[in-house]
Length: 459
Figure 1 (cartoon, rainbow, N blue to C red):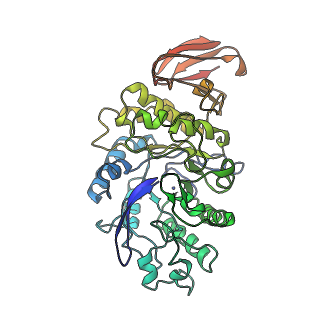
Figure 2 (figure 1 turned 45 degrees about the horizontal axis):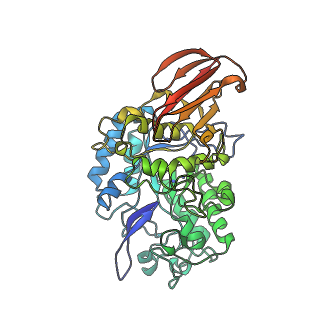
Figure 3 (figure 1 turned 30 degrees about the vertical axis):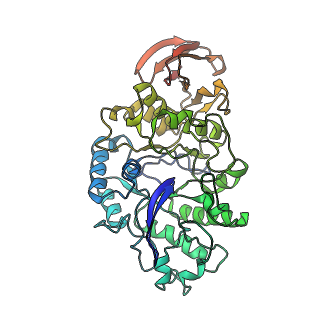
């Protein structure tokens, strides 16, 4: 995700625009839930958590520690009991503080407490800390100070290329001795403090140095280097039960490499200032080459549904700023899409911006889908086809869930015949109205602009 971030260099301190997650075996104290671990490649379900992104974006800076704590208290009091048990830091901080091994210790040098302290604080609340960082980043101050890679006598500076023509970052040179130890050690460092979610950003910049908006931002590396780096991360994450979230990936060849190593991928551009345009209308239906292949969240969830599913890739449509949408129809559509797709539900709203919208994140009937590990699919993954606005999927008990979306600016008729759902007659319940609608063999409704209806079908 694109983020303003401050890195330490000996000559200049750069405020940088960030574009924009890993765990011990999931348990009740984290926001992901393991399902059938012996039979599935991906043991996680889409995470439920809070991010300070909205504060960072609006202020174009780091989040002060007191604001961070106020939001944690808000999540603790209002959403933790529903499954939102994680808070994950984001960008815009600085890396002036690092440990003896050259690993970043805190979000901002202006914070009183470090990540380890906050991880312990959250554990005491029955919550967990998620980390935003890329273990391929080298802190130049640490390298210049003569830090050695943990467990070796290899200088940190030896895996950093001083004269590499790369924007903003000093990247690990994965072909150098000590590189694997550094990358895996970084993840182990966070794992040892209890972090169970790692959000790794700017992957496209490392892969081939190409950015849609900025042009060339780094060298073209051998394809094997990118895969090697992701393999190291996944091995370290698997060792510690960490959830690995891949951000800003090009997803070349239908995410061939990312599917092998990531638990979750970003599927759209940054949320930015939010609103419906960002969610549904921005470059709608246009498939591009490289990050991000789709600009808006709904297109991204729709197209990449072809690789999602139980035990498969989890989709991340970036942070939700529900307070920026125009009406409840839009707000329910956005939240429904994240739950129905099995994707991340990441709250970007804050204690002082949420307004009267908290109830939208508290829909227990949608949250029950996440507990089940539910992942729905559109009738087609072509975002240009109206049938892509009709989603369906089955719960483990045999119930079906249907979501009828309307991305248009006028009323649209949406419906589904139930004869294809292994039975012609079903008891139907509306999961937003929390009403039983009776026994039906089909359903047809005139959906309002930007609206949605979510139904649960039970025998």
